[in-house]
Amino acid sequence: MAGHEIRQLIIDSGLKLWQVAEAWGLNDGNFSRRLRKPFNAAEVERMKEIIAELKKNKPSEC
Image 1 (cartoon, rainbow, N blue to C red):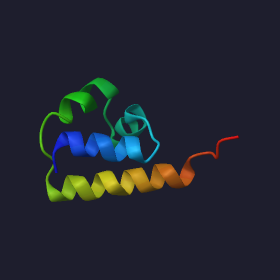
Image 2: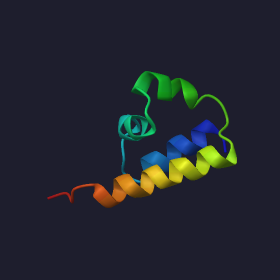
Image 3: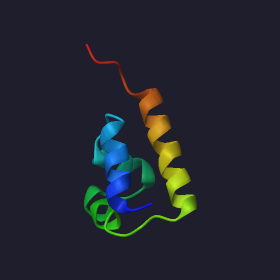
Image 4: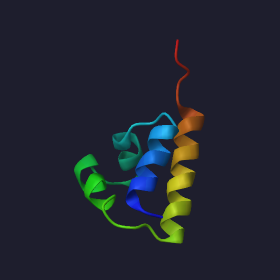
């Protein structure tokens, strides 16, 4: 999966890139650079797990 597809997945989930970067264990600058290259299947699965976990724990908006 291409980096721009991962970026769109994060945005569509209502999360911020920095939130996912932090959960992945990177700072936001390094994560942005990482998005320039394709992700392998294992990384995509991990990304989807992180997004699901963050969405589950996201406080509801008022």
